Structure formats: structure tokens, C-alpha cells
Amino acid sequence: MSAFVLVAVGVALVAAATLLLASGRPRVPDRLAYAAVVVQSPEAGAPADSFAPTRPWSAARAAELTSRLTEVPGVTAVVPDRTFYAQALVDGRPPPTDGQREDAHQGHGWSSTRLGGFRLTAGQPPRQAGEVVVDRALGLPPGGPVTLLTAAGPQSYTVTGLVDAPGVYVADEVAAALAPGVRAIGLLIAPDADAEDVAAAARGVVGGDGRALTADGRGALEPRGDARTRWIGMQVLTATAALAGFVTVFVVASAFAFTVAQRRRELGLLRAVGATGRQVRRMVYVEALVVGVTAGLAGLLVGAGLAPVLDRLLVDAGFQPATFRVRYEPWPVAVSLAAGPVIALLAVWSASRRAARVRPLEALRAAAVEQRPIGRLRSPPGHCSSRWGPPSASVPRPPTTPAAPPRSPSTR
Image 1 (cartoon, rainbow, N blue to C red):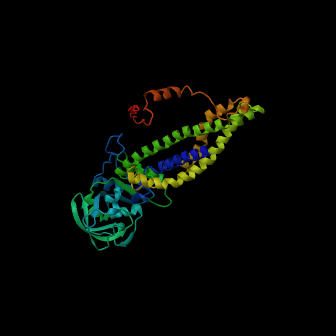
Image 2: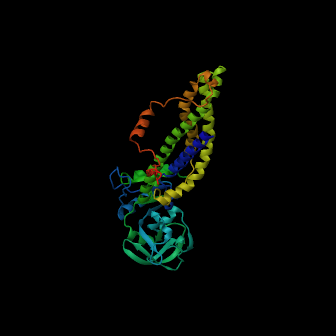
Image 3: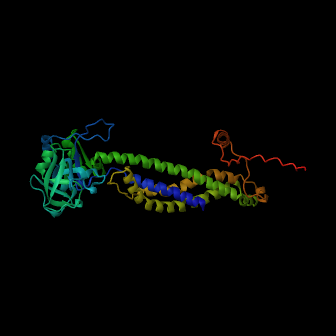
């Protein structure tokens, strides 16, 4: 029973860590979810710096690429995505709904909503300078004033509409003034068009002055701050998964060794009735395999339920961006199901060898627990700990006051 519980706990940790690892891949920004192909501007930093921002195209170059990409077969619309810093101030303060989302501090032109499939929940689109559409989570009513903090300083705007998306959206002319450079151009394609074929044609258009991304590759366009935070979380989760598996093997090995020691007389009886050492070893392996499979399944269920709780803890601790969500994928499930039997078989290896060495006469002994001297690998650390380790705790005896000498009887 102890081995079952230990294996289940170990597999639960491995399952939770691998599920979070699978969920930690770069995430496609919501505002680009409907763009099957996105053309990104070239990298500006060194190749080793994966978090360096891209070099934006100039307004003239972006217009030229937009015109040429419109002619690609299968493309129905080409939308330059202009991104600039913009933060809405509610009552003169940043709203608490921003949280850790970096895209909550970004502004875009209204045409970028086509790339994310965003729709107005109230009001109307911005059509001129001084008009803005904001996230309805801010609690601002259409027609009300709002202050936007941009690179040009604080400016007063009128809320014309609301959307279910972070950030703010202004008229395209205003976005072009606030963000002259363009770092991404989204391509909307026809339903019968193949995204890879369109991406190949787009690469021929941009050449070495950018790259065309499809499917999960569009995750490279997530905010750089989120990408850096996600990378840190991946290192933490990788170390957690490796440490969980490593520690579980040794702890379960101790449990199996204790179980074999308790069953020494039973194993001796099996040897006495003719069981060979190989048969005893096979029996112990089969028992460990059964424990590993059942405990692995139980640990997987526990780990799958634990992952959503841990993802909020990771976000609160700053190891994952606020957009992080658990995604249940096949490979973490397969790894977790295989982890139970593998951990159990690795842990029982030493105990099975010890069980195979039990002699038939062991069944006649009165002691059911194996009595053997400390092993050669454990002896040096034990001697060092006893000699140079912290002294053992002991309760000091209180100092005794010497008793007064007996008084001699007085003589009269």
C-alpha cells in the first residue's frame, strides 16, 4: 500500500508538470487568431537573443508589401497590424483588470479587429481622431470620456464602443500616426485555400525582409514580455518534472526494499518448495508492474485535476503570463501513464535481486526481518555524519548541589 501511494504521488507530480509544460508553448495572440497566415518583420537583435523585438517596416515598405500580398492567390484581405503603447486610465488610475497582461497596454487600429474576429458588444467603431473602442471589462459606458496614456502623453478620448478583448482600438489614421512602423501583416484567406501554400507564396513576396508564419508558429508574435516570462516558467517546470521522477524512484525503492524484508520468510518458503531465484525475481517484478500501472492511472487523474490549480499559482508567482491556460494534450497523458510502471520497475530492481538471494532455510528462522550489516555505500557517509555532523540532541543534567555533611550528634 505504501508503494502504491508513493508511486501515485510521484506520477501526479510528473503529470501536473508535463501538462503545464505542454501548455507553456508560445500562444497565438487573440487579436491574430483569425489570420491563417501572418507575415512578420525581420529580427532586429542577434540570433542568440530570442526575445529581441523585430525591426518594423517603414510606412512605405508596409504599404508596398500590403499591395503585393493582396495579389497572392487565396488571399481575401491583407491587414497591417499597427501596435503602439496605450493604457486607459479610469479615474486617473490604471484599471485593476489589466493584471499582468501585456496586451492590455497595447493599442491597435480598428482594422486589426478583423484579424481576431472581434465584434462590438456595444456602440460603434471609431471613425475619427479622439474616438476609441475599449475593453468592456473596464466598465466604461459608450459616449463617456477616457484618458489614454500613449507615447505622445495623456490624451482625452471619447468611448464610442466596447469589445470583449484587451487593449484599445482607434481609427486607422490615428494608429498610423502613433505607430508609423508595422511589425506584422495578417492575411485572411478563402475557406478552400491552403494556409501553407499561401505562406509559401507570401515568402516569395517578402524574401529576406520578413517571414510568413502559420498555425502554432504565429505564437512568435506574442508580446516579448510574455515570451520571456513563459521561458522562465518552462525552466521551472522542467526541473520540477525531473526532480519529481528522480526522487520518486528512490523513495519507492526504499518502500519495496522494506516490503521484501518483511516477506523474507514467505520468500524462503517459496524457495523451499522449489521456486528458483529467477522465478522469485519475476514475481516481484510482476507485483511492481501491477502497482505501477494502477498507481500511475490514479496519479494521472490526480495530476490532471491539480494542473489547473497550479497554473494560477504559477501566474501569481510570475512564472507564467496572465494568458497562460492549461491545455490537455495526448503526450503528457502518455508520459504519465508510462511513468508509473517505469518508476516502479526501476525502484524494485534492487529489491528483486535481494529477494532472489533468499535461501530456503530462511523460512525456518524466527526473525522475519533481514539482519545484515550496513552496506559499503552507506558506511562512509554514516561515519562522516557521526563524526563531523551536528551533535545529537541530549538533555543536559542539571548541576547537582553537593549534599551537606551530616551533622554529628551533639554531646552534652
